[in-house]
Length: 116
Image 1 (cartoon, helix red, strand yellow):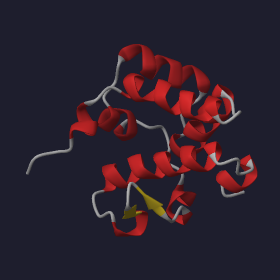
Image 2 (cartoon, rainbow, N blue to C red):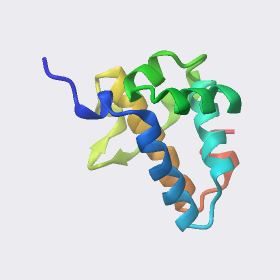
Image 3 (spheres, rainbow, N blue to C red):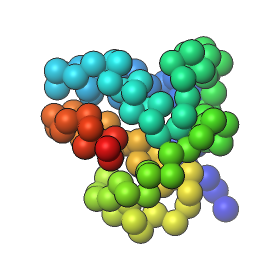
Image 4 (tube, one colour):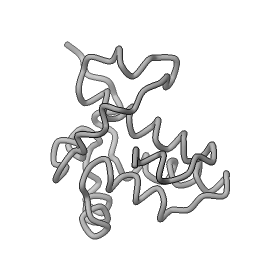
C-alpha cells in the first residue's frame, strides 16, 4: 500500500506554512507552537529540535512525547473530508493539526481551539 507523500515531507517544510496562515489572519507563531504542543506534547525546545532535524511528518507524530487524548474531540471537515471518517491514524493526526490551525486562522479563541 502506497503512503501519502505528506508522510515523507519534512515537518520543517510544512511548519512555516502553518505560521504564515496564522500570521496572515493576525495570529502569532507562539499560538501555532502552543497548538502543536497541546496536540503532540512537544515542548518549545523539542519542537525547535525536530524542526532543525528536518524530521518527516510521519516521524514527527510517531516520536511525539504525548499525543493529547482530547484530540478525538476535534471534529469537522478538512480538505473536504470528515475527520471522523479518516481511518488511518497518522493521516487523522495530520488533519487534526490542520483543523486546529484553520480554527486559529478563523479567529477562534485559544481556549476553544485547545478544547479547554
